[in-house]
Length: 466
Image (cartoon, rainbow, N blue to C red; front, top):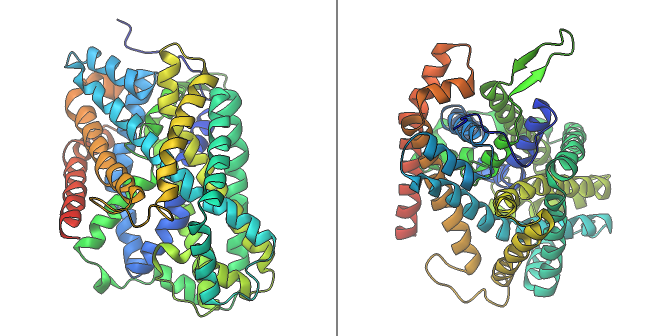
């Protein structure tokens, strides 16, 4: 069997398109919504330093492993893992990694669309100037009224799902590639504009100090596990997306100056992706915290910071209508680039089984939309109907992000580190430095799996004692 598998869905036209696409998958609500508020809850700069260590020691090694498996397999995560298990002469049950990733991505897409659609609603409200002069009670009431309206939530969830699967239906080059080539530069420009605006506010120095001041007394064992989980979630690991995007990554690029081809490095590409993803997370903090301090608002507000506290800040400042609108457009762009990567693994698998891409996208998007209705109703008509972890939304979120994702990451690390032939791994990675290769191998074989086990154990312990 030819062990260098050619992708069947097409390829990114360049290494930088892959980097943009994978960064788009990584950059999402986890950066702009979750990272700033958990930074606020765990004391600022000390948590940021801990998070960066987790990115470097756990996130990057597992991401390199996932891209390696994807490019080596050249297919959807499910069929790629089947191929790789066969080539490694091990049980085809390892194909379960692909099924697990595709399932995780599908489940996350179902509720991610619901939360992302709140940003769509807030773009409209910001443009209308609804936040101007708003009090804290009014902002809280506005957010709760939105969640209490099942028809508004369903409509915005439906629109966001159409936007997502419309891109996926167009394929790798006409859909995914064109989308990231437009949305990612737009996202970076909007973020720079918002940071520039935040720098003109009276609270900028205080916001920077909060984000980068190192108060290690506020760190705890819980903070370590939260940082581990955030580092893993923010890079879109374990959900099939990075493996699918890795399958479309070119192996060689042509040097425009010399005309010669050279291998495309997975390691350096992943480091760039992780750096860009981290810059966006820190940039979101730089854009948001100064606005909160300028308005004398509390930064440690939890999940409501984006949709309750920030509208207050925009409502109090000059140019609040414009910059509030730009901010929520930024959130929509980030969520959109992530959501299309969540739908791709399952769609690619269906295409390989003979479905047309349009029909596959409609089937996956329709099923995720239906499942997402449960999350929509969790905030209104079903909010009092709880089981296990809480509402329907809370159960789906816990299962996918706290159990399935780290389990997928654990299995990816074990397969890449212990099962995949070392000759295959070294050939695919093409690392010039043997020391760097050995460092990656040690991390992905031992350190990263132990970290994932810790995340899963903490999630289960928290659920049992919550």
